Amino acid sequence: MFHHLRQDINSIIERDPAARNAWEVLTCYPGLQAIVMHRWAHWCWTHKMKWLGRFISYLARIVTGIEIHPGATIGRRVFIDHGFGVVIGETAEVGDDCTIYQGVTLGGTSLHTGAKRHPTLARGVIVGAGAKVLGGFTVGEYAKVGSNAVLLKPVPPGATAVGNPAHIVQKEPASAVSATANLFSAYGVTPNGDDPLSKALHGLINHAVKQEEQIERILATMKAAGLHCQGVPDCDKLNSDQLNKLVE
Image (tube, rainbow, N blue to C red; front, side, top):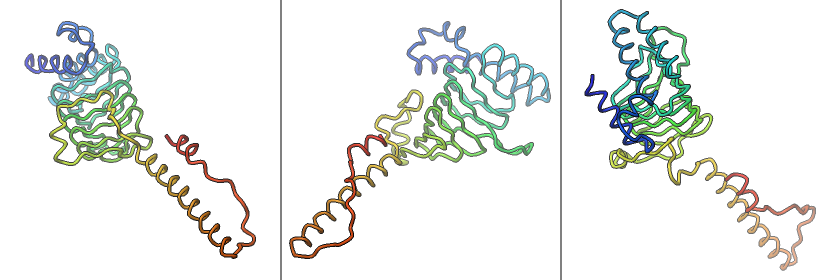
């Protein structure tokens, strides 16, 4: 138990620049306290003392503002940063080295008792503040879920999901997942991770502008050849700069 606690403290110091020493982490970090109390509650839950497990979970919520069902499975070196408002459901599984920020919900969308209703976070997953991960699917190793995302489907290993509903904005190849395993992205923020929807819109706008230029050239060539198009109304030209700014 103390070995695991030492690992938890060291992992927090590594991932939080505000953490100055082990004593401060032990006494002032509700995420660590919630995980320690969850281990007590989970032991009771798995040893047929379910009411006591729920009661310890209830006390942990009062003390820390973090609610972890005693049936949930929490791995080693999990860091719940700030933590207030975090809710982790009964059948949720959180792998080793995961990081969860405040306001995160690992919730279920099914009412069937005994079924796998809550998500599984594989090793090294980062879930940003306010994100909602809902359903009995798996978020792959070292994947990232952006702040305030609403995730309703699986995420491949090494990928980044953002938005409501969440969609994949960056997907690392399998060979790059292990290479980036030790890189930590606070709040799941990925540098230069452009939204694919905005990329698609930028491409469509630029394509429409080029088509407009081509049509103008065709009409000018036809007019020079003495061919006039009748009944073609004039229209405003596309302002690509203005449209691109709207989708940035």
